[in-house]
Length: 203
Image (cartoon, rainbow, N blue to C red; front, top):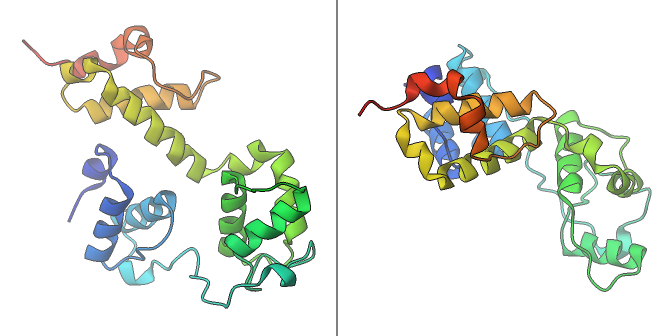
């Protein structure tokens, strides 16, 4: 059994989290944030059999382009972010090609998680004008942390530390809770060296 300390101090790709979930009998479908949530619940003492999926897989037949309207419910209607929906939005916005936004995918997951029977396609369109509100959730934090960690490991300075993942986590927490850009840069090691020097390798 992995420990909370081990889990928090290591970086896992989504496929790694899915493997861990299957190994311990946890739900293995969902976003990285959801998979993290399942594993952390187990590590804090919740029995795997008591940890239920946050969202059920949508197995309904997908709606066709002609069946979609502004009043179409997002939950339990067969509406999905697929090529049929893409055609609908391209027609609605009068563009040749329409690309789904991350905020739309997150909104759909929120609807499924909360079993929101009121949300409609009109609501999905409205969030395109205010994506920042939709993106301020644990899933977006996961995306930002992933990018931060990738950039941290591109900096050769990480090799100077024992447990570099721990160093990255300390630096990430500082900027996550501040008004600083949520991105890694080498100056963070310099500016906050006093907080991470204990992990410096000894020559």
